[in-house]
Image (cartoon, rainbow, N blue to C red; front, side):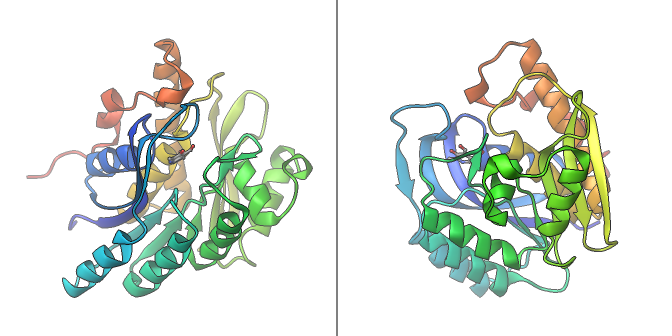
Length: 281
Ligand code: PXL
């Protein structure tokens, strides 16, 4: 199989294991070429650190995209996540339109918040723009907070339980046109994982694992990076979600055992080998 190539449009946070510092090693370990377009450079992510630096890269994105276009590059996936400004919504939308071809999957992780709260750097206009951006996606991967924002309902009013998660993904599917992978979805108290609506088959299916009773920053980025890598390697949506759920669980279990702080993310580095396909010379 030729090495699949992914354009990854996320921030680069120097410390805290999220976004590009997760996507690049995970996609590489999966045998996928990751081409980063950094939306911003931060000293750390914004969840749990005070005084982080933030360098907005908005002006650089269309310049880099134009250069890539002039080189005739193509991508098997465009994968976007945390955005640095409202203007980046339109830039990412243009990128998806310009680089989309028959074999391209557009994965939009509508990163906006967690635990019922919107992230510090996200304005209401950015959240509205993110919702428009998801209309261009083949696959979206909201957590419950982001699902509530996309549906325009208060977090506390989301339908609960397995049936509620099924209803959420089906309502977010734009009448079955796009696939939806709801993360942090739980069908029983001791289980956690994803609820997937697959637009290719029209099926909704829960992909669950035993819950690790701790939370870590950046697990959504680990999840969607594995999912994207598996999709460009040709796996179906439920197969890709299974790999992502199992990898996040392995990372969370290891990190919880080591007693590491939530804000430093999951210690995924020693486990990258779990993702590596057997080597063909
Ligand atoms: O994991 C999502 C994320 C990505 N990038 C930055 C963040 C967050 C969540 O807080 O702050 C900079």
